[in-house]
Image (cartoon, rainbow, N blue to C red; front, side):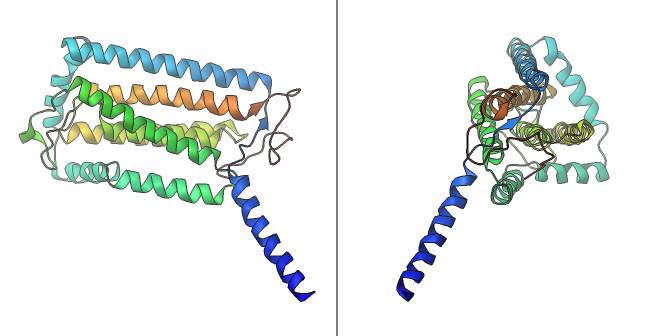
Length: 269
């Protein structure tokens, strides 16, 4: 009897571990108002169209040497006149924070903590996929366009002779902040929280762009291209998330762990 009891306990523990692991990868579905789902799809389309159109316009101007890129040299030269010791120190801090070492570590830590703490891993996985997509897309475009950076002697944090268009620093910051803000605040009932969340994301993006321009590593159109690509990625994330998780009354909800009630203020849960 004792052996049977011990065996049953081990079986329950094994089953419990498997159930906990399994439920992480069950995509939660939620009921929302039909109008809200239409707004989400509309927003995703608008973001994707605006992002694609803005990127194409920026790319054409860079390749042809006119249009939006005509402002690159004047803006770059003006920023050279605004440099100071205090501003440079702050901009270098931002460059390190949004750089290719610190930002991936921050993103990885956020994804792991969120993934383990949350009931479902759908949103952390979406964030990871968006970040990876940004890296792949930027590397492909970098080697196709092969645009030169501003003069090396004007760079304030070491020489960088890699290609310039688009800015990987800015694209990573935009993807992390914009997609992260959507994935967190899309589950909250209070629209003001989403407004403040995206305002915070906008401030972070502005700081990342300003840092890259001030330190002399990019032309303004490099950063504009990164922002436009991030809008395109954000639109794709919203569309995919809405298609996979948003249900309206009358539609079946699948998944044993999905919420069948009204949307709740979940935050990172």
